[in-house]
Image (cartoon, rainbow, N blue to C red; front, side):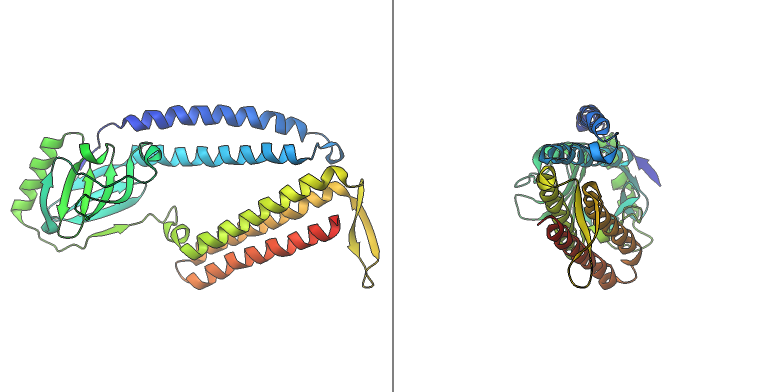
Length: 304
């Protein structure tokens, strides 16, 4: 089996520059936050302004993670050819294109439109689009579709960008002329490392979105009302509804943190459970929504 690296993507350098800028932004935002939260909890400057700074820090962390993923995917992208198939690999994933299903190889492909176009150029082009003729195009290229090598099969089209296109095409055609020794199925074999099946489950994604949206909303409500709270708040009540215990107000902050921790635990359990029991993994994420609702009710009841 011969392995081919893609053309060096210009988008990789863009992603690296953006990662450096995001890292600098992380330091700039995190340092004052750490300073403000380094004292005793009673002195923490909890307010809505601090919430927005924390939300900015979270956005920068997510952006850094996305850029790291794009850089790693572009760095590990490769194409391999043997007697039976063309294989596209990246980050432990592998797309299989049987040689006996390849019809023609074209020097470019015209598509209708590229979703998330500015992000597509970061690292390499990925995802599925439609050609001008309406056929499905799978993007595995470090170049835009118009500059990519188009592999036309009996089903879909695959856009790739091997570094030495002419030699790659010659090798591919030679192996096609030899004929296959084993029948393959066109498929994408996802890496178990990232658990794509779990994250691509629509029900799971909706439940996770609701879970973290509720957590962010209750934290915003708590931080907005925090400066108006007295130094101690009623945290426990007896059976008759009377106050049983007063606690420092900063302990309220641990309630949404605990709810967030339980949701993370459910995600970890769902990742391990999904391949064996999808319904159970979804139920766990639904339980995370319920946890957020219950903790939100408790926080609102204490504050009001």
